[in-house]
Image (cartoon, rainbow, N blue to C red; front, side, top):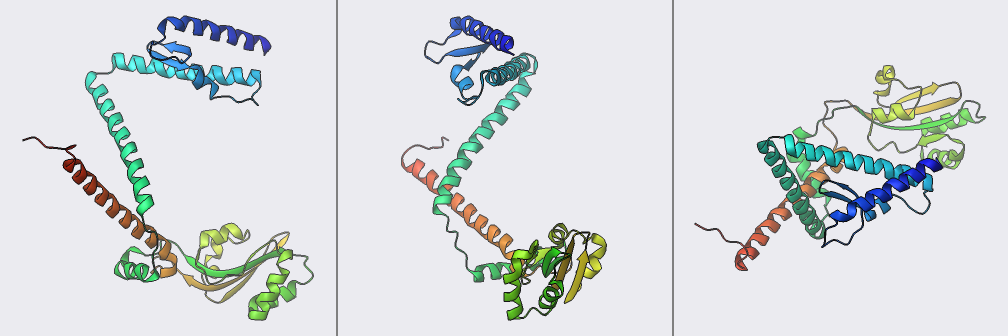
Length: 286
């Protein structure tokens, strides 16, 4: 490994000396590698490693990077020599357009983010929901449920089961106080969740249990070799049914904020054009 590192350093020095004749007079950066008219500088190499990188690892990292960089530059040069001019012009135009989009998008996003009012009240969300209900149809089943996962050998399993099924205010408080012995649990049965999430959380539950899972006010007890899973399905919505407002509200919020954002972008474009005309920075010639 040491011999490899030494050879690499010698090659690197040789490449650096070879490059000296090609230094650009207006650029005082130290050239490490040259491929035709493209240059790789010492600062580019230094950015690849840090003080914690061993000399051997540094040699490998730098050597691999130089090889990749040089190969890419050689391929680009060959492409410029061999690709038709029309195709090269097309690529250049694509690169130019992409650069323009990066700049304009970064600027408009910065301005809009600063000025965007992200506050939305429930009335706005509800109005949009009522006007666009046909766009909020469920593509998957939803359930409201609570569940507890605990060890099969728990000595208070019957007590937990009774409180879990009855689930009055006192039971809820007792179960939360017992929660340290549960391997996993969720007591919030007022939130809609996707059935896929339920299958991921409750190991023994399979797609074949769908009919049981999609029954309202249904208690289920499942087991594997180590655990007992208590599940109580509070409510159900099947795919192709109307999505409830509380489930759709997050999506609606994103839609409404995006509408505000697009309106701000149009206003920004209009204002910047007006200012340019006023300051004689923009004119159209007949």
